[in-house]
Length: 247
Ligand code: 13P
Image 1 (cartoon, helix red, strand yellow):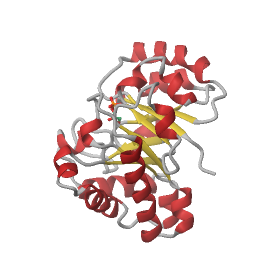
Image 2 (cartoon, rainbow, N blue to C red):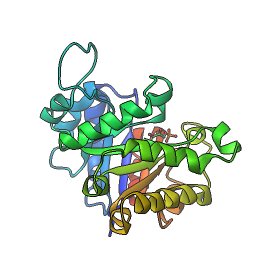
Image 3 (cartoon, rainbow, N blue to C red):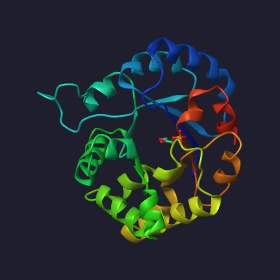
């Protein structure tokens, strides 16, 4: 049985002070939740988040990192730094990193391989633009993203990776994918994992939906057979995220 996962992605929001206050408020609300609860936070917030989340069961992840070990990479942080700060999850391939910061499939594959090598828990994002969807090319687009990201990853390593399907047109727009659209792509991703690896790996891997998830639509999305939870942006900045965790 796959354990459900409710993950927040704060993006460029929350100061270290706000991080401490928010986690103190939400921790009792999600205590004992059936699902795993996790927040991806900005690098500067990591120490405050790790301290505030200690003993609460809430996991902390890093929104970004660079795949080299160390050196002349001004402004970047390494996995060793992140790990030393007490973080276990890392987010890879978010559409904002791909589009605004020009991260390509090759980089994303390098990041996934590096995260696995460093024994971090990676969450890999994929998703299509509105243009791709309207052209009817969603499934082949997602397939190409997944095949490229998992190049060189073994079945066991893949099973321990989380995939987040986030249609770009649904991110921060309030325009959520229908449950049928979300299930169709998440189901296709699981079939693809079975094809690349085997049925057991496909059965183990967790696949989340992200894009305008909120307390009202979460339960229906998470009830779909191939959706194992959500990756939540805006709605993870409020204590009502509790309702998404419980959904
Ligand atoms: P929203 O939930 O704000 O649409 O953002 C989704 C997202 O990009 C999470 O990574």
